[in-house]
Image (cartoon, rainbow, N blue to C red; front, side, top):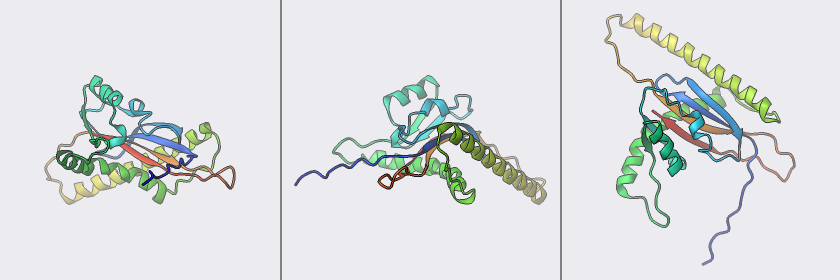
Length: 201
């Protein structure tokens, strides 16, 4: 039986790479790139080494010797998903580890889901500098939304229980990138969305 033919799909658009505080949901660092850039291409640029949390969570797209070395140099702990060996299934231990890590890593989905659904993010601008301005404003607006939510939540909690015990939390970081579409330049081109995620706790 012949091997299936691989068809390359062109990608048009831009990627928003964001470093996010997982505990409070604030975007701390972000970068913009064209959509053809590899998911982990700006790994080091959005990695906040000043974050007090020490573990780095990511999916398999970010597991590479280069990224592992960057994590090691920053004196952080890698919790990146394990990859399966070529032609072999994933080891059972790695499957359990990946499932446990996914429960933490999946929290990053909230940020981009909010920007695309509730905030109605749609970029129809040509030119990376114009897109950088618009994406930056959207990231800033998202932070304002999170701030208002936290202020309301803390005020309500304080009113409900003035004698409640203090909960200790860590300031945790989340990083991910998502693709924003641009209109195709001809009927024969199609915009292709690709979402990848990385996040650090």
